[in-house]
Amino acid sequence: MSSLFVYPVSSPDLPNKVLTHVDDMASTLTELGVRFERFCVATAVRPGTAEEDVLDAARAQLDQLMTQHGCVAVEVISLDNNHPQKAERCAALLREQRQDAGQVWCFLGGRGQLSLHLGDYVYAVQCERNDLVVVPAGTAHWFDLGEEPRCVVLRLFDKTERALSLVEDDLAGRFPGLDD
Image (cartoon, rainbow, N blue to C red; front, side, top):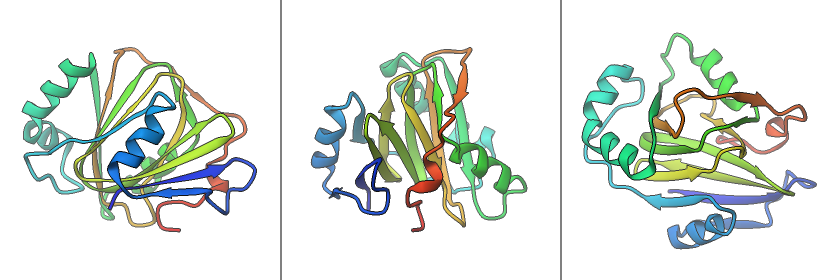
């Protein structure tokens, strides 16, 4: 089940709001300029599936999303516990960062937690298959796949060339992760 945990930056151990209803999650995030919605994924894709196979399986929906959101580049995150570079990929995503490009996160399978640092709050969105999150450029965020990753995500960008900057005061380690 998808859920949204809202934490004050000053107290990362206790959320002041927990939402599990899609409409409540969407309206809370919309106020911040982030879009959350359900997007029906037609083709089942298993976590750990090779990038080319994920792109082939999701081609029709990928084309639709890229057109609808003005995206020009895509990254596939497809990890399971047997992935040879699991630790490196998970660690890179778990570091708080900003992209100078807008992003669309489309969850095709499994689950993950996309945390957004906006002002004095962290919005931890636990996502699963059929979730879609549109994140504006410059939003500080990190992505947690948990201790035993099992997730397939298309991450679309509205720029081909992107600049990534890591946030100096990395908050990710202070907040509960996917498995906490």
